[in-house]
Image 1: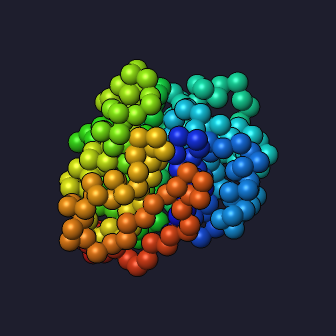
Image 2 (image 1 turned 135 degrees about the horizontal axis):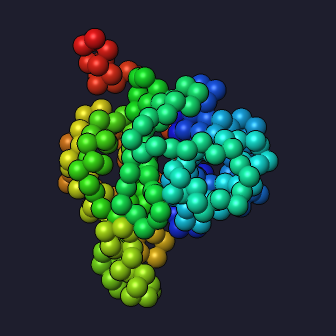
Length: 265
């Protein structure tokens, strides 16, 4: 399995996950033209996509979904709550039940309910039977359910949206500061680090820092916040950027937790 980011931040998001001939695009927060350019940069055409998955209805995640899905005749997987925002669109909707996994091509997808100020938001974990990739952005707080679901992964695409001091001193109006920093907003650097302190890092090959605010954070602040909890970790810390995204990252090998699962049958 491999993954890349087409871009990550408040101006647009899109994450590609590939397993064999299965290529899933999580969110499409760019114009159709920009999305196609970003896909080409990743060496992929729209015709090669299998489906679009949508985490929630905010414009930086949903802007290009309908046009992309129509042009390439793609099914769109999303919760009914998220689908309400696209109710005028005649698309091939596949409804996600937050309590059920769904198999799309060669990947099993587990939706995870998250606290965010949207109708029915979720994030996703992807499993190819050997490796697990977790995507976790647009989350206001770390819940016990999130910790349980993301406990054992081989790669994690993780929001570290803001530095609390920069947010407090920054240009946002007070209502927006309260929204971003609230229980239904985004993860701060330290909240993201706290999750890493609660999950099993042993199998984690990559952590990609994602959805960094251009006004309320800096990559070096996020890395610094992660330093203590990752002090003895031997994996690779990556950065998904707004414009450049993140190049393809391959998750290698057979993870121990899958060996243990298969060996116990």
